[in-house]
Length: 298
Image 1 (cartoon, rainbow, N blue to C red):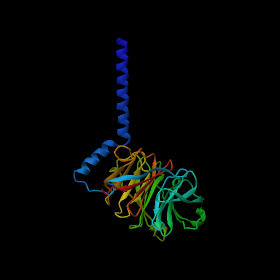
Image 2: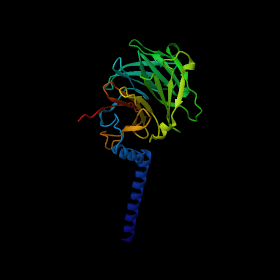
Image 3: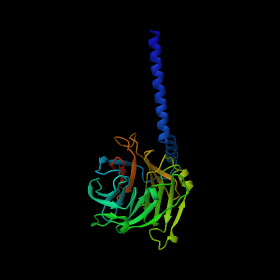
Image 4: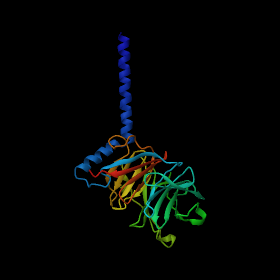
């Protein structure tokens, strides 16, 4: 009898240890303490950001692609574009995540991101070379050949594990934002590439104070809000989207965890993020799952 009681107590103690350990991992992995501090300070006088009140509309819709890792909104066609890093092709999607067409690519190496900049032109990011190219994709484009259609720039950084991950563009500032995934997370601003005439026009700058204010484990995507110009930072490991104001300070967040977000399940490895002109937020996860979020106006 005593052995049975001891055994039961031992099992209970083991379960408690496992629960505590799991809870500690959860808090660490998703930066829950930092999120809690931000939420408290935000409620006590913080500026309301644009991500407040967003709820999922489309959840985990399967897209017929392979390794889709980016998302951008084409304001001229009112469609979305995504690019695969496993399969060399670009997909054009409806705002519901349905495939409209596929555009094979030639000459590109591990394409990580695509970003629409207007007038049928896109930026394409190749991760191994930190190379950003300007390409044209029109309604009649059947194949995107890098050797025929691109103007490119390679950005050299003196960082270990320096490869870029996220890409965004500000039409207002004519500025490219490009993110380094981790160790450490970095966001660089590139001026002069889209509208510059010579390589000497290109200016690359960083802002380490901006990154110090982020409470994320990694950076997997970037986007600019077309209405405010604010930068959105996507982290797939932290399951979080963070809105930064003009000074680079966090002012709102959108959780991609299931708890309290309205999601049926947490978003797995979110890699792409895009804003539509009506304020709809679109997210692509690397298992090729499509999401959309709209602001709750109730």
